Image (cartoon, rainbow, N blue to C red; front, side, top):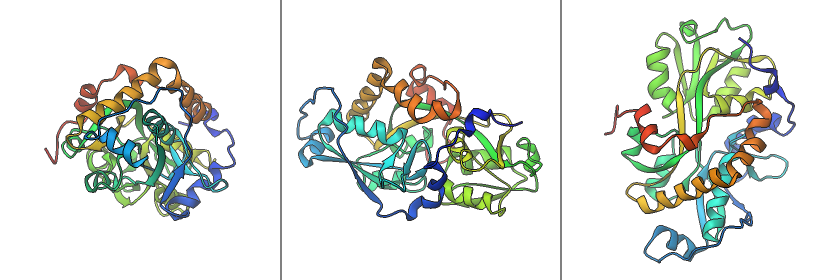
Length: 303
């Protein structure tokens, strides 16, 4: 089954992104203030919001190698995408500068626990196991798991991955849930980032990679010998992560996200970063609560 041809719109900068990955420059990028129009509220100094305002910047973990959602533009050196845009809105609401720190799937939660970052916007699926270690905002995006493979691989669905090598990222829901349960007879290749999986797939060292459809859509722009195949494997509500127990900060971030639903900002960002490449309208995250999201991935490991 071939993916809609609208997903193959040419985007020159995206063709370079997978080659950049984590090797592009420094791990930390300062982003200029986005000049949001919302009034800046002054918060008490004993709150996370007040502490961030006191230091004058918020450090947000995001991916640097995922086209559409968070990638470091090799031409401008800026980190761009849907997640950085949402992070900028949070910074604007606090009236502080935004500093972006590269956060891959495996280190997102440790970065929060260690205080390396204040907040994470990094295509992170809300799960009950993760919620036992950190706190989440309300969902801000609904992705679905799919499979990316070459046109001649013979892979058409999860069952046909038997005996094939399938790649995904370390500590992702795909490593922990999808591969063992839906592709148990495949050989599992686990690497640090999805851009590594993509490079392995292009070199023929793996037969397929599995992750969220919107991540695969970005990679698909770069190689017309690939296809997204099979049915949806998962439903993945993304949430912003904060330190465990900081419900006040999580509520603040959730409020910023909810405002984007109400004032049209979310739809504008979706159209700019996702819709124009996928040709799809996307699933409305405003209809999904945090409680709904947690039911999708019940506790299986850490809680």
